[in-house]
Image (cartoon, rainbow, N blue to C red):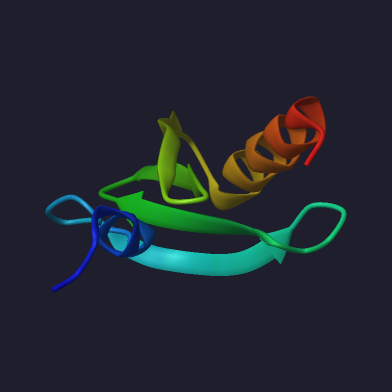
Length: 74
């Protein structure tokens, strides 16, 4: 049986969202960042948690993810 932690590790994208880019970030490169697109809006997931999904382009979304990681000190 799958534990809650294992289930949570697998990112479930909402309906219509497609993964655009996925990469590791942070000092130890252990934080997973996933950029998604739904319609003409981009979203960011950091460690399987939705950061925001209201960015105009991929570059802006990636910049926001990098800023959040820097603020968290990861």
